[in-house]
Image (cartoon, rainbow, N blue to C red; front, side, top):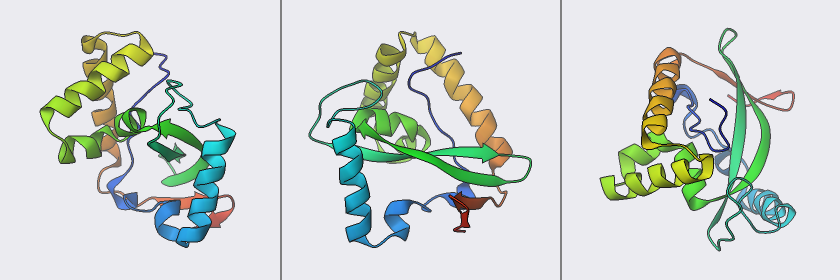
Length: 145
């Protein structure tokens, strides 16, 4: 299923390994403010103009070699960002907000709630395959963890 907005599963071994957590605050702020500026202060997925923007790391995975590599960073509104991290969102937000995220996913992708449930099931299968496996995290040519 081709999607504009998708959930992105990460292995539990790399949760918390982010540029925001690894870089000094001043450097991370420069990177994320550049990201917002380059996106003209709008979400790069749904194009919402929102004063609450997030800089999202897009990761690529080699599940055979157990490598997670940073591909790029993009500017997202809070709704798109919380959909991207739906696994985390499911742990910290109430059902009403999760319903709002589901509605947002459906609107952005022009899909149904049944399509969302199918996508979520596919993502959960990927998450189970990556569970309890240690991944090497790379940014550029550098290994971070």
